[in-house]
Image (tube, rainbow, N blue to C red):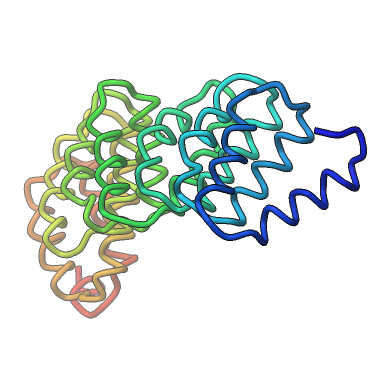
Length: 251
């Protein structure tokens, strides 16, 4: 709390080296008072982050709300350093903040947290009625490489919001497999506009390329050709050209 920054930094360094929950508690209490200048709050947050004591989480989360903007950002990054999955719901809310810098920082921190509880929080975002929250959840699925989200992604591909649908299709193609192929083909048949048709076509092409079974994919695509509408048939032919192989070439 002194006026000498060098001494303040030395105090922080000493606190970093001292073991025990009592030190974490003392630093957390200073943070919770919210009367330190911004640079000192940041110093305390950085020290707590390096100590990696989950006991500091309530104080660090409090620092993510209100106050100085730069303190908020450092606090969000510190949450990631603490590595406690219990912070996931708070970070999920911050991931939808109106400030782009806050929301992106929160998504990065949330993506780095370990554990199934964090995955469940992301899946909860996908189940939200709010399109912005769904979009944030879809981005986090990609950042966390959540293969477990495939069923939720399938559901989101039919969402009323076109942005949600497009993002869900993209990520379903990235994490899905052969079992998801029939569902995408069915969506190709029912696509009601050119934008949706293009998004489903791109997802199909990506998925078929990832499956690495050209003949299997070609068989399923060709089976749809006979009764397909002209626009759908053209999309199937373009996907076939990406699949490759003797069967695709013969068609």
